[in-house]
Length: 354
Image (cartoon, rainbow, N blue to C red; front, side):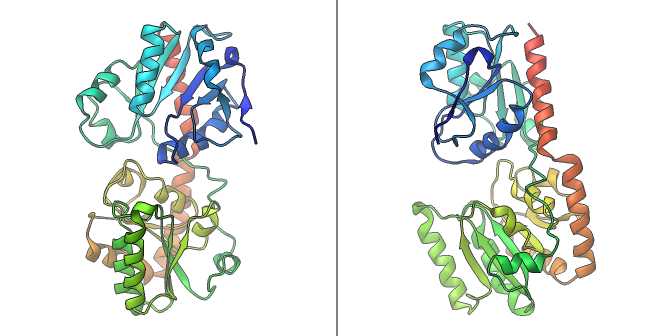
């Protein structure tokens, strides 16, 4: 399907996406833009985005040198260095009527080039308080939200399990995301190899893709599972576009990352009524109510992961109460509609500040 052609004059916000491969940033754009388009004239620019999003063609870029209808400037919302640079070139060299907004998810000290770019933005957004602490200029914290209609608890987890070809008599814990060392998939697998023999009513699901670069890593994990005799209970199910259905089959989610910029999977799990055991990386400590909707553990600590998971796996009453709390927590604080509204507030403030 061809991408929807837009009228540049009607576009008040441009969202560049200069990375071809799917990433967390790209996924954020894909989720946000359709909702933002209900309220403002917005379009994406760049490769790697689905056809249903409003999109500027490259040949339409010169149209950004003219003011949009009914507004003095446009907002250029960048999320990567090359996108900030492109906005600077358009604004400062070609004198395009643009206000530049940058969203940072990084939790590390920025290099000089990145600092140079950030200082020239008109507004900066941090995706968490941890991220904000690494920024040396004023910023606004706007945490990511998710689609709570897409991610919701099931009427019957056993029925969902059957539909997915799983054993409805088993309870499932899961680890979803790219299969690689950074994501801690090996920690999850090792924890399950240690735990599942003591919890015969539980099985585990690894959902996600291993790229060619990480194929050997996944093969090693599968070999460990085979050696432990747990191939029928630690399942590698690959990548799924309908991942929300797989969340609804779970009773416990584990986010074992060694490093993360933000990390949406705990929100997706909690919105699905699934408590979460998560390492204290990314924004996880700001997403999870420790002891209420899940448990935070140190990163790279398999023993801590096993101990926390065992507590949830062995306590049906606590786990069911946490499932209810998890859904309510995400619905009230982390809906994507809330994120859209907060972004709109930033756009409005930079346009007014002329």
